Image (tube, rainbow, N blue to C red; front, side, top):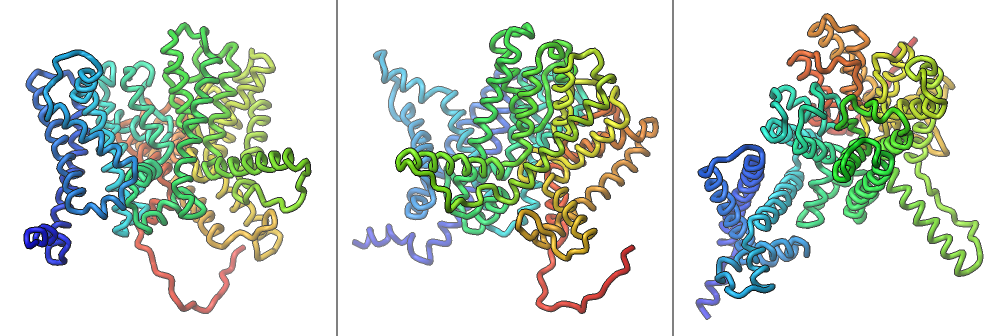
Length: 609
C-alpha cells in the first residue's frame, strides 16, 4: 500500500510543479524538433545530397521520432486526465499512428509474404514516418502558436509575425536549387515569397521560366496559406485536432475570423476551409474545360495549370505559369470562358468569407422553407428573418457598382484602343476581366502600359478600394469605402447620424474607416516620395501604380518591377506586407494601447471650412 501511495505522489502539490516544469521542457524540445524536422525535409528535397548527408538526415529523423514518442508518453503517463480532456479524438488517432511505428522495432520482419508483411513494410517505410512526423510537427507548431495567445500576446503582432515567418520560410524554399532553373538572388526570392504570401502578384522575374515545377508548387502553397490567413490555418488545426485552447484564445480567434459566437467558432473555421476547397475545385474544373486540348499541354500539365490558376484566382494572387501572364497569345483567341471563370473566382475570393457564410445560411433557410412547403403544401409568408446582414448588403452593392462602372468605363475607353481588332464579345469579356482584376488580382490580359491614361487612373482607384473585409483581397476594402462615403453624405446633409438600410453605423466603424483611409493615403504618399528618389528615371505614373498595387496587394505593374533596384524592391515588398497584414492591425501591434478613461474632458469645436 505504501508503494502504491508513493506511486501516486505525483498528484501531490509538492511534486506537481516539478512535473509541469518537466513537461514544459519536453514541449519546448518538441517544438524545436518540429522545426528541425521541417528544415531537414526541405534540405533533403532541395539540394543534391552526399551519402554522409543522407545518413545524417536519417539520424535527425530518428531523433525527432524518439522525441515525439517521449513527449506523448510523458503526457499520457504523468497527466492523463488533463491530456484526455484536452486532446480531441483525431489527436489520439494520430498519436496511435505514431505508436504503430514501434511495431517494426519490437517485432522482426515476417518471413512469409502476405498482408502482414506488407503492413510491416509500410510501417517501417520512410514515407509513412516522414509524413506522420510532418503532420504532427505542423500540429504542434500550430498549437504552440495559438497557445501564445493565451499568454495575452498582442494578436496583431502575432498575425504580423505569422505572415513574416512564412515569408522567411518561403524565401529559403524558393532559393533551393531544385526550385529554380538558374538560381535567383535573395532579394528576388524575398520579393517573390512576400508577393505569394501576401497574395499580391508582383514578381521581379518571369515565374514561368525562372522557377521549376517544384518552385511552382512552393509558390502556390504560399499563396494558399496567405489567402486563407496564417491564424485561420493554425487556429483550425489547433482547435480541430488538439482542442486545448483557452477561452481567451477562442475570443481572439473569433474576432479574427468574424465568427458570431464561440459555439460557432470551429464551424466558421470549417466553413472557411470548406468554401475555399469547394470553390477552388469547381474553378479548377471550369478552367480545365476552357483550355483542354488548346494549349498543347499533356493531361497532367493541364490539370496542374487549372489547379494553379484556380488557387491563384480565388486567393486574388494573380500569379501565372504562362509567359506574359493571361495575355499569352495562346489564350487571347477563343478562351473567353477562361477569363470569365477566372473573373468569378476573383470575385468570390474578394467578397469575403463572412459573405460566403451568410450565403450558406440563406441557401439552407430557403431549402428548409421549400421542404416545409412540400410537406405542408403551405407557403409561410410570415416570420421572414433578415437573411442578408448589413455587411453582406454593403459588400454586394459596392462590388456590383464597382464592377459595372469599371466594365463600362474600360470598354468605352479601350474599345478602339488596346481592345482594337477583337470581336464585340471579346471586347466585353476583356473589359469585365480588366475591371475585375484590379480588385485585387494581378492577372493581366493586355499590356497595362498600352492602356490610356484615363483607364490607368480608373485602375488606381479600383486597386486602392480593393475587395471585401475578411477576404483574400486587399485595398482599403469596399466596406471602408462605403462607410466613408456614407459618412460624407451624412455630413453634407447635415445629419449627426450615419444610417443605411434601417441601421445606424457605430462610431467605432466610422472612426476606423476614416483612420484606414487617412493612413493609406499617408503611406502611399511617403512610399511614392521615397521611390521617386530611389528610381529617378521612372515616371510618376509608373511609381504611383507600383506603390498602390503593392499596398493594395493587387500585383499589377507598368513593367517597372523587374527594373527596380534592390532597395526599391525591399520597399515595395514592405508595402505588400503591410497591405496584407492591414495598416490598422499593424499599428495596433506597434503602438501601446491606452486604457479607456472613466472621465471625459469638456467638448469643444474646431473651425472646419
